[in-house]
Amino acid sequence: DLDGVPSGFDNAGVKAAREELETALTSCGLHLAEGSKVWDVFEAFELRLLQLSAGGSDAAAQEARVRALYKRRLAVPLLDMESTSSRYIAWERHKQAARGGDAELEIEGVLRSYAEALNEMAHRRPIEMRIAAAAQAAGSSDPWAAKGGMWPLWEQYLELEGTKDPWRSRMLFERMLAPQAPGSGSEAPLSERAWLWRRYLRFLREHLRSTDMETQVARRAVRLCAS
Picture 1: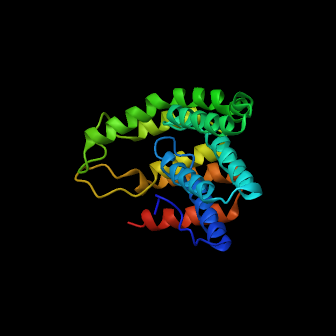
Picture 2 (picture 1 turned 30 degrees about the vertical axis):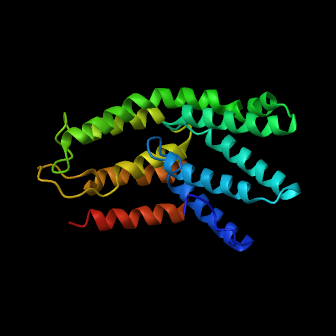
């Protein structure tokens, strides 16, 4: 229920919910086009907990949690960054006005990494739009129908992302290798292309060095490329 957290939600339930939300952020919170959906749920959850706070130290601690979440979110390049920034600034000014605090000082601290993330998002937004347009043009029956298929766009995106933040590059591999509905075209979907899985595995081996992650990806590759 995103309208709020049940009033009887105990500490164990809150902790469990936060752990699930953190897991979701790890999985897709860096997705530039869709990651905001998970952040939205987390934001609504923490704001509702703040609303339910009884005041005093509990309310102060929960307010700090909300502020910290906004700071984390606004440091991540996401397509809806501008609206999130506006929402945070309005929230902060309201909170500080109620107690005579310095809203601009708090805002400056939270938005310290925002400008850089906004710039990164702006560089990536055009290719996100091209990927979305190509997928829409292709239609559900043939994901390779648009101007040579999707791979050239993903390749360009990977080159743009580089390896400065390997977790963002990993997100691109996960997105492009997600299984697609069968199409009528002659081209195999990216998720069935063994050479691309090998490239992904090499990337994991060289930049993230996680045996467990590499093993999980290898199993998916074998399953999807078995035919």
